[in-house]
Image 1 (spheres, protein in one colour):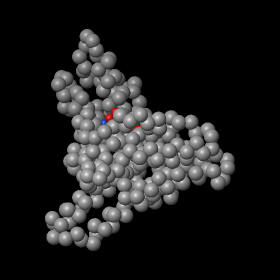
Image 2: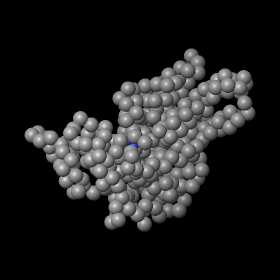
Image 3: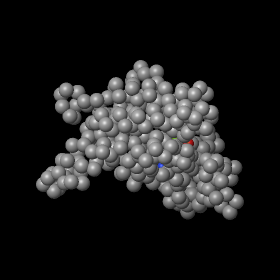
Image 4: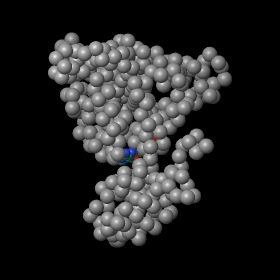
Length: 307
Ligand SMILES: Nc1ncnc2c1ncn2[C@@H]1O[C@H](COP(=O)(O)OP(=O)(O)OP(=O)(O)O)[C@@H](O)[C@H]1O
Ligand SMILES: [Mg+2]
């Protein structure tokens, strides 16, 4: 734990709890694979060179393009679809696989006031200073360093501050501070990367988007993914498979609404809800589950996505 005043919390990986959280995310295999590979390579360039020598007998030219890979990822998409959970847990997987020490620093902009012009830019500059001060290579050699992941959650607050600010030259300062921070990491060859999470990728400044090595889009679960979570939660009850399938189907989009349950509707509302309904003297049945489902509407998509 760090005694930093800026970050909400700091985690150190490897960490088995976080790795389990990573494993428990359903239907994100492609995204997990992409982010784990990209992050490993950004945090330790020598991995790719080693691979190239092993497979091709030398470091092939294509490898050099990764040296300039920007250390930024943007996780964007609908509410409750796993952005924050993946951002907080992929480092645990990378650390375990590659035997690295990685620290995760979390900064949430929404919870910090944005009233004063320049407040966010100050916060961002300060957070990059603190972050860069706590990671780096030790004199012992390449593998003896602490890598860093800086997570900027609710990153659309950056854009919000720009909308609120009236002064023209001031309103870009938050974005500029962020760009400077990312460039500092890239140019300093520091074993670090930045992940921004947002519901509104359109609100993220194009100059920031251009710097991203990857923009990963998260969506609500499809029927198969819903079923997989329901099965995990309700196997062991007497509910028949066909009824579990009916539940997964009923959670999908309908004629009246175009959207179905989010992942968090399933894991934070539906499953705990039916457990509490039955506890302490009843068992969960398909009837009680269906009744709960009827009164539990899916979370509305983020406002700008409904338009
Ligand atoms: N793919 C998934 N598989 C299993 N559980 C999931 C998945 N995605 C999200 N969840 C669960 O849903 C809850 C909310 O997820 P999370 O906070 O990561 O969503 P988010 O995309 O960051 O949402 P928001 O946009 O509201 O910040 C968590 O408890 C998480 O475990
Ligand atoms: Mg989130």
